[in-house]
Length: 389
Length: 215
Image (tube, rainbow over all chains, first blue to last red; front, side, top):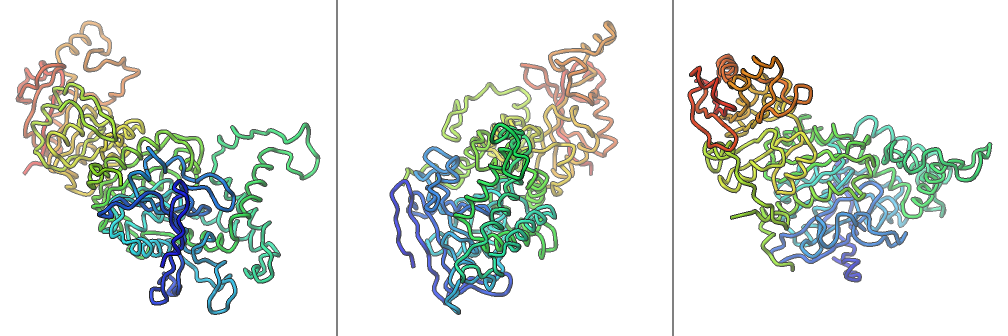
């Protein structure tokens, strides 16, 4: 059932899909979520044969507002460089869907949702979820929207992991897959950084064992520190240096522990603004899902075997030279597995000094390469000849 | 057709290079082709448009790969020395190595890999046995700089130059059969040649071979 919220044209459509109790979300952990709600946004119009749908998968700290301003912060759409008229994902040609992941905090069922059994927020009673669970919920949404096969599934970072999971779990239900700045499994270093973030949240006295909602507080300090640590991993040393160097906030040193350096002030701001729009428990659950991600595990450990059923999918993989969070070597191993599986894979390592976050920024080579890939995929899928809906 | 409309713009068609014409003649329509060192994808695009091949490319430069993607080609950024190992056996009908073998680090390894991953390989290379090169080396005593090999020794990407005779010898050594061979010269149509004839090792500026596994 769709709540039927339709925004202004430029703000897209969408709403919250509520799944009936007899359609629970089955989880990898063995549990399930009854009465799943999935909050989503759409941009553009589904064509008559329902063949022009693109699913955008969002990253850890993002949400369904890929192409419209954020309702909480008022900030501009997070993927405005990629989604829009004349861009690789174009509401004038495509029907673009972006849903908040399971475990999230922007309207999809997550630890801050109300547990029907108790009438209070789930907190840590919420089941641990995985990337595959997120994808399963997306597949339920897409199916309910009447789309048998997506033209493309596109995502960066954790979104890229979901793209790979889509190809592995639903190879018949996507035509093209675009995986940007991601990996087929979380490395020890990835897990380590996430653990720092989780420990920061859980060390905050206001976290209260995850039940902070019941007492009306929030572990803001812990979540802010988690965000600060993570934010460093999204940037590169040259990008930080170019932006801040050793520049001071004021004329001299404070000889204390105020934010003397501009980079400190910047990180504090990143942390403080993040807590306005993100839930601490969601952060725990989603980072856990990413840490558990290892696409080849449980399938003999051979990534090529995972992709073999998806060899008719057109893949495009991107990495960035200065991304040390999901470095090129990770994308390269995805591409080698795709080649070994006989899939139609393209891959570019884009020269950028902006670090992991480059996928969200204005990168002309990414734009033109992805544009070319999407255009040729559209032609192959028979979309190119169709007039705009 | 004077151009191909891809990605919403028309890509002007350059005049077809003579070696490309020969490759178009050798590659059977509808086959699976891997072009190693595909650059900006001119040959791949030609093969797709003219011979309706299922084309893939491998290219070392990000600029080249991006240009290929913009043309709608499926290309992976990588290098022939390291990345061929990851392709499964006989994944392609043809693998093309156009003027690239002399620039790889391990030509012998690459040559062996070509015919592991494909039924047949099209390999073209400059012939260091050409009379002009021999003469230049003999008379000037310096590394030849010619139209086919335009860079001075210290700037050339061609680190493993060989002659037609060297190449037939290594094919023998690796158990590779030469199914067809042509001499290439800039601006002239490819000329079929018998690589075993000594005179061809003097005459050919560059040579193109169609190879398969023996037996």
